Length: 219
Ligand SMILES: [Zn+2]
Image (cartoon, rainbow, N blue to C red; front, side):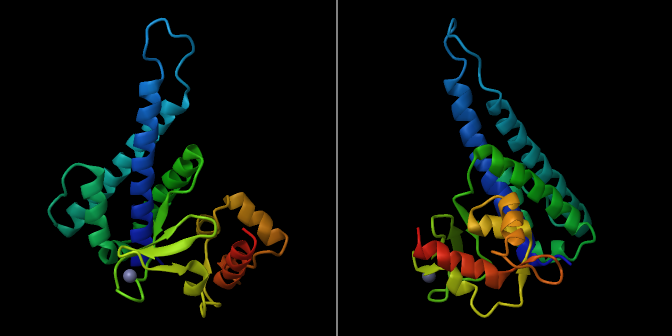
């Protein structure tokens, strides 16, 4: 079952990775082959970064087109920012569509590839709940340890937000995002008992919270 928060998160992450790929790919291309007679060729990563950025553009375009066709809402402008906004605004509707899991799989797959290619986590990840002080939108900033910061600058520790959510679980990919490690790293932590899984095989939020608390004690 897909929920609106998952839709918003996947769309946000795809958009941010897209922007990162564009910037990094274009910088490298410009620095690359430039001067005639310069030795060495452009590293292949430029092209693959820009290719993946185009792939994400195509995903956002085709999925927002499907939303437009099925909902008869006006088609957004033909750019990733407008299409991502369009989909976030319809997250609840999208979550109810039969094809929502396919959309998230495709977006998340591209996001993971892009994350690996950029060799880093995106600078921030959308947080489903608003700021407890001013109710503004807030984000997880992937610092060590991660910090939650709202638009107005109120800061809190991520682990506070996970208090009292012992029973909840997240996917390996989500645990990897939050902990700033790879999915393989999550798998290894599960094997070693440093992260625990629920009956559904997903990672318990409680064990993620404990890992985060340890990370903040010994940076
Ligand atoms: Zn705030």
